[in-house]
Structures are given as C-alpha cells and as structure tokens.
Image 1 (cartoon, rainbow, N blue to C red):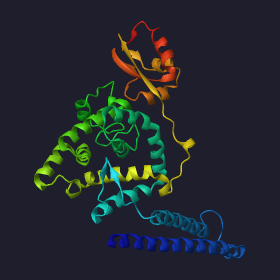
Image 2: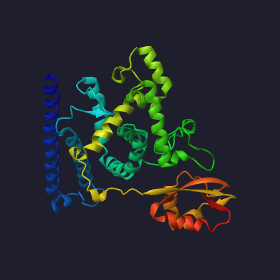
Image 3: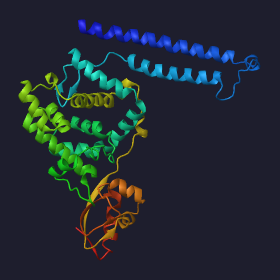
Length: 350
C-alpha cells in the first residue's frame, strides 16, 4: 500500500502543474496576439516574419508543445503493476526495477512519431517472425528484441558494423549459419536472420536457463554473462550489476513490448487500415553458370528494381558471380519468375 501512495500522488501533482503551465502559456500567447495591434506596429514593432513579436509567439508555441508532451506522459493512468516478459513476471514492486523500466518507457514515449513508425513496422513483419518463433518453439516476446536492435529497419547498419534487423556482427552471423561475403550478406535476409537470431537465443537460454540472461548474452556476449555469474554469485538478472547498456537493453525490450501491446493507453492511435501490409514472399533457388546482372531478376518478377532489392537485401552487388542464390519472390510473382528464369540458358531453377 505504501508503494501505491508513493506512485500515485507525485504523478497527479506533476499532471496538475503541467496542466496549469500549459494553460498559462496559452493565456500568454492570447495576450501577445491581442497586443500585436496596429498601434504596436506604429511604435516600431512589425508583424512581419522575424520580428520580436512573432519570434516570441513562435517560442511560446514551442514551449506549449514541449509541456504538452510532458503532460501526456505524466497524466498517464497508474503505470502497470503486472508486467511479463518471456512468461516471467517482472518484480515491478521493487523501486529500482520500476525506475529502470520507467526510464526506458518515458524516453521512448518522448518520440511518438518514431514509435508510431515502429508499431506499423511491427505488424508488417510480425507474420514472418511469428512463423519462425513457432518453428523453433521459443517465446514470442523475443520478437521485441529485434524491435530494440534496429527499430525493425532491415537495412540498419551500426557503427560497429552490426547489420540487418537483428544486428548480427559478421562473426556471430557466420557462426549461426548465415552466408556473409562480398556478394551475399544473409544478415539482411529477414527470414534467415530471424531464424538464426532465434536459434542463437535458444542456445544461450539452454546455457543460462533464463531468457533474461540469454538476452543479456545476445547484447554483451555470453562471456560477460558468465563472468557476472561467477563473480557476483547470482543468476537473477534483476540483482546483477551489468554494463549499463545491457541493463537498459532488457528494460527497453520490456518497455517496447508494453507500448506496442497497449498503444492506445499511451496515446498512440493507429487505424488498422494505416498499418503497413506484409509482403508475402516465397523463396526460389537458382544456380547461375556465369556472372549475371541482378536487374534481370527484377525484370523476371515484373517489379521495380527498388521493390526487388528491398525483398532481397542480401544481394549486395549489381553483378553476381556464378553460384547458388536464394531469391525472395512475392508469391503472386513466383510462377512468372520461374518461367522467365528458364529462358536464360546459364540459369537453372532448382
């Protein structure tokens, strides 16, 4: 009960203060508009762009918008007391745990434009990722790890050269069975990278017997997690002293799950018709006996080159050497693609 009182009263106070601040600023703007009269203009205050009056009004409007965003955050209903991740209950009743969660939640909500895009991407890629989750029998919440890694941008490349939606570094990607060379980089193949990432996480969970430690190992490396277990005499993620990035990483996964699962609660309203639609792709394997230009693949699908490349980000060059290739083709284009590929005497469809 003590925890509930501490949680609710400050939130209401902040909300009231912010409401008053926003209202007062609106009053100041109204007063400024009233004062911006021809009489003032006669005294040397012009109403053209860049004059003191208009500049001040612009500044006041920015202040209103900033305070309104803060009011939206702090006027939330009581934050959830029952949070789950990977079928494990979060001890949100602990003050330190709640603080770490709220840090990520509020920072994410500061940029609702970005979060709106992320939510729309989530539903675009969910069918493909859910299929791999089911195939490997792992918790569906692991999908939020990809959201955290790249905001579901399949073209993402970090400063450390981690690549793709799951942000594999080259060595880890190769170790998990992804082909990475000059011409092909399967870290950008969304389906294969998802399968490899979930396989990697499943292996880490097999070692640590804890999905939170598996996620920590994905971020910091399993060696760091082993070191922490050995030197801190605990296997409880919430009691561990980890690198700040890794601690925040798991809580950001949790915060993104909360926002995406309950978006209207946090003032993010998206009509179903405005969600991005998934491309349903089929894989076709071809073998080329000599070098060939990648644009012939786009033409065989009767697609713009950009659409073809977005579906086949793992193909990294305009000219591809002889060899085996797994091509992602929209299901409705599969038959025509196969038929056109068979017209090339140097390409065999498998």
